[in-house]
Amino acid sequence: MAKSLKQRLAILSDAAKYDASCASSGTQRRDSSASGGLGSTEGMGICHAYAPDGRCISLLKILLTNFCLYDCVYCVNRSSSNVERARFSAEEVVWLTLEFYRRNYIEGLFLSSGIIRSSDYTMEQLVRVAKDLRTLHNFRGYIHLKTIPEASPQLIEEAGLYADRLSINIELPTDQGIEQFAPQKHPARIRRSMSDLSLKIEAAKEPTLKTKRRQRFAPGGQSTQMIVGVDGATDATILGSSVDLYSRFRLRRVYYSAFSPIPDASSALPLSRPPLMREHRLYQADWLYRFYGFNVAEITSVRADGNLELDIDPKLAWALANRDRFPVDVNRAEKEMLLRVPGLGTTSVPSILSARRHKRLRLDDLERLHVSVRKVRPFIMAEGWSPLRLTDRTDLRELFAPKPKQLSLFG
Image (cartoon, rainbow, N blue to C red; front, top):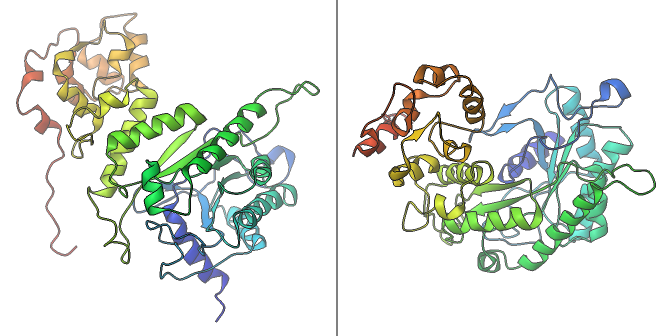
């Protein structure tokens, strides 16, 4: 019996939850209010939904199909998996996107797919959706396409003309892991496709000799997704792989996706650490590397096994392991050291640097700058405040550890 559009939408939106997506950051500002057409990459009136793991979703996030020729052990949609299958046509995805936008449910589209017939055929269908939205319906909202590494460079190049962001999944943090758990995929080809895409994005930023205008090509850049918890890689290995990807391909983001065993794969893939908390800590560590001046060796040196602490965030874990670097004088310390103080961030540190030009800062001044004084007190000196030996307290870690919660008897 043929499935209805509603049934297929339920299947393919649920199947897409394993693909990490992003908001429309980094793309060009486009608004249809002045020029006609439909949609906007930003603005008011977007209804945001929240997934069970806390991610904010404001895109129509679906798969074109969850049929797949590949049999990656960790994937719920692999060819040998006993899941309910469904498929959209390109026209149906276009229609759904427009209707969801008109109802003010979304601000754009996140589209991925299993591999059907061939990589090129699948990529052609994805490109067709984006092209029709842009050229036939003048859709100006956000479009993120998950591309197929094995697809022809011409198809990926065409995708960049219509999508705001493209992503090619690196899959796993190690080549050995990919070869073991996704033998039909090839790490060298994935990296070559990411390199080609990076070169095209950089080339598009340069103005042409003839028009002096920049070509529009994936203005939101490229990202990738890395599944963690499959191949036994430590957090140090995962973050080291991410740093390599950032530097080589100028990625906007590496998205970490926690692997949770699915029923018929649980025997093949053991679960070593709580997946969602591990994913959360990896995102925090990634943030420290990109915006706080930490390197991977520092972040992952707290534990001998190269993994991050799960009960406290990696910045606090580093501070507790390096107590000789504290307390930090908020009135004299350099920006780089202030950024390493637990409780101070990329917003509060510039405010501190600006405010201390005019006066010596006290704890109440930090409060007025929206700093959590309770968290920073053990790690700083300020006018009228010194923690004495507070940093050396044996129970300092317990002061910051999350409070125990009573488990529900009816959960």
